[in-house]
Length: 236
Image (cartoon, rainbow, N blue to C red; front, side, top):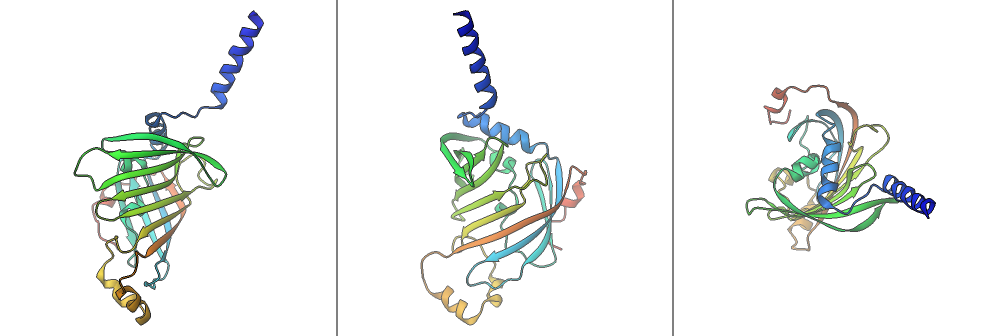
């Protein structure tokens, strides 16, 4: 009997070690934040490709600077159609205010098991109504986000990771999906439209979906980026 109890105890310990996942949303989110907090700052080159049927835009090369907790600076020689929500994927930005979180279910993304959480900000001043997060608990990273806002409709972010930055939770690719009619696109883009596209945009047709594809390369992590980098908000 004693041997049986020892065996059961060892099995329990083994299961606890190899199955560290939890359904507690607060613990899941804390682990994600702790993992991202390994990154104090970074500088990265990005390639941006816009896929919107009435806009003709060349691919854009740019540089993004980030510093904890939420400083972001974007530099580009040309205008880049990329809302702030699309280049600030820090979980700190999502969770810096008070919120309520719920565990929903388990899902799979590209053969990776993920936990689906819903996060509701507390407070009437927040533009975000609801965010749904797909979290890979094996690496404590966010793989997908869907956010509903008061002013910009609903947008989605897919984050893909490679093995280049194994020690840091930083993506190699991102896909930003949004409803064009809901996002605030500058009027200056009218010059980039072909006559056919202008006519399509005039038609009161259902909401047009758009996507922005971002590729990240040449990360420089924890290099001590000075605060003055973030003082100039103009694109260069």
